[in-house]
Image (cartoon, rainbow, N blue to C red; front, side, top):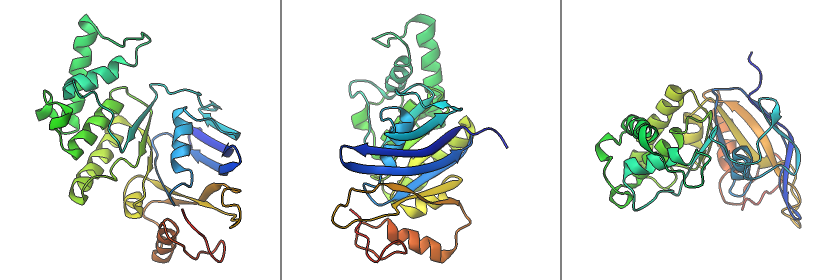
Length: 270
């Protein structure tokens, strides 16, 4: 067994009096693909932000290769959101080259000469990999939703990150397009040997993609103080090895309706 790549040791996160996460413990090895599910507002995206470095734990430790997770984003961690982040005045190719340029220490991020030619070559290769080889000269307003998401993945991957964070990346896409994106992200994961964390509200998607599924939920509930307790990882399951009754139980937990579960008589999910 290899050394842990990422470790969460009793990680907690609070904002003022609101406790979002508590007692999160997990060990991840390089190359794993983790999907995160849970009711809206249970801290899944907050956990992603802590890995990215734009949020820090309020308690406990989050470690990368045995050292504290850097408290700012770096090229070793790429992220793709549901909302696209592109420059509308740049072509598809120029957007990916710009993403490469922003890794530089300079304020402008501009590339020149041989460095720029190399970046354009890399960007072109990655865009062909994600199925946008025919659209290098198009502008973002000329792209469909699925094409924009392919562009966002190319922007994240050109930095050659070790970790790719996906925050509900396919939630706004039609089912047919989502199936294509599932095949794409699995291909990108294998080809670039990434460690992936993906937040999703779709349990079927969570069980289909990757190697492990985490369920975030609150172990303790106070109906008079709904934010008094934070969520933790209540299930850590290998993908493809879950009984039907457990699948239904988890599916009920992440629906945004009042539900009954084994933790309490009535749980109100936000």
